[in-house]
Image (cartoon, rainbow, N blue to C red; front, side, top):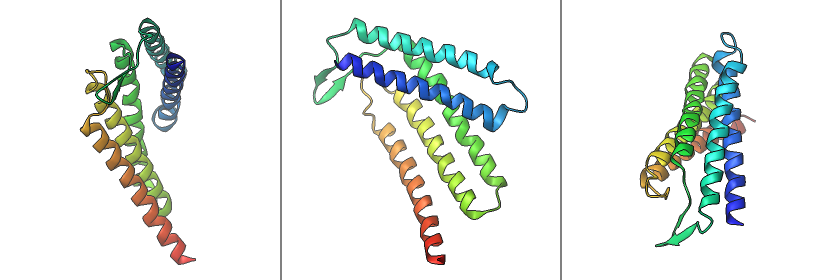
Length: 170
């Protein structure tokens, strides 16, 4: 049962990573490259990573194991490399959103774009750090947790500050 839920989670993960390629294409490449040239390689990477992840889980049906209070899940190096390649797209989306925020004149739109771009950047950095630090089969690295926490705090603060300012104007 755990293998089924992990595989379902991996399906959602790789699907959402593929969707990010469409977002990046829309933000940065739509005027220069047809989407099919981005979609096909991204789909191949995502499907390969998903297949390897599910296969690895199927080969290790005795996992996850709980050792010292940490869950050890089956991992595939190929799947992790696939995830890392796809996470680069998430990071680049954050950069593109930050560039677009610089061109916006409305403070509300600009603050929203900055908050979302910083969230994308922190997810990209955190996801990459998570994959690079998970050689032991766990993803409890303090660096990863700190990156995610800082990104979420910045995102929340920016939105709250500008929502409070907007609320006071009313």
